[in-house]
Length: 129
Image (tube, rainbow, N blue to C red; front, side, top):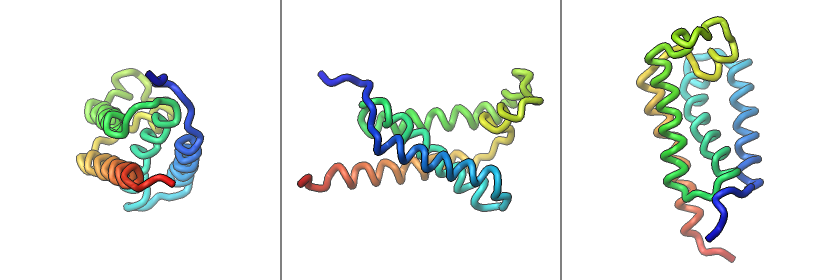
């Protein structure tokens, strides 16, 4: 039986590239499309790639885990968890956990994970050389 913990450089590099893109979006893009929608679309892919960097878990369970985590963060926004934890003055907590719930965010997370599953399944069915 193979170990469930391992390191996959390819996923880690993808996660770091997406993290850099997310930081650029957060710092420099203040529009009505890229920041709210593309940022959310990418963040779930970032979480997936980060998980796959270290865990030898099949695509679907990893994708579902990343999606559920994203949903949980969004739910914490719905219930104003940042304020309830007394972290309303923490800029870092406000950035990481978020402060505004939007139903559309759940759709963008789902679309991001759908793309991941599509790509992963497409690559896994290709014949290997």
